[in-house]
Image 1 (cartoon, rainbow, N blue to C red):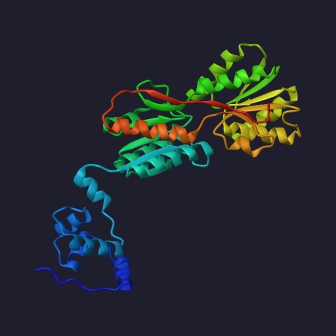
Image 2 (image 1 turned 90 degrees about the vertical axis):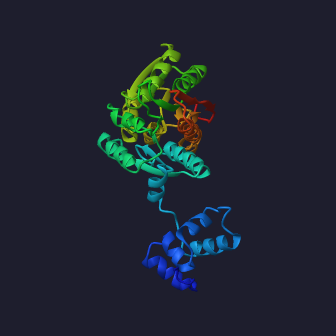
Image 3 (image 1 turned 180 degrees about the horizontal axis):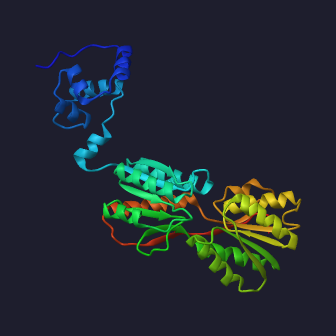
Length: 343
């Protein structure tokens, strides 16, 4: 025999929420309905009358009832949760990538768990384990600059958890990847330097072990083709980019090429400290997500590599995997030259 429905005011309902986690059983007891009736009412089942649905939903809303995600997962073997692993969220490229993925997740009724590796392989491994324990539906991953062992990621694939690598991706051709058009971006930058008849370039690249650096450097070298004097330097951080730029300015280059926003920020700090005027004393061109170049006057000319567009592409690739696609591919987004006043 079910207890008779009880009348409670809003204050009492709030106290109930504070004191107890609201469950289907509690709602059923308060309304004098079976748990199955409450469950079907919340799912808008056609067998339940509109009057009953209204009573159930009003009380559920008042109690801030939310389905138990773990219980749903155990019952359906599904968990509408994606993992997203980046070196750091304090990066405008990754910030815009996350924003794009989060937008698509919301549209498709998925949640997003964002994790940072701090560019440390040990933390990366811990985060992969956390994703596995939370039974995520899929993982978007940007590897660290020191990642060598892909087995932890491959084990996720073995558990039917697709992994989409983005931006900093492994060389392995058996992985799904989404990237900016690294070679095209570097080629556009190099051709812009040649078109403007520059003679002496300092080209600042990132970690030499990363595929993104290798692709951009190879394309840049091919385009320049020893037509002008070029000094290639490698910076692993903004601070290192600043230090290397400061040292290189002694040789009076007429152009700085920066492989990324992180490097651009350090290079421009060195240029400003040296009190050089852009582009009168030195020209600057970068590959960028677009935010950092607009912080300077004149604005820096850059080749756009949009984190936002990459995030949209990554989500599309993930959904294709979940739909059953077994086609492994590397997808890229278009790169375009955005003219500022720096070259």
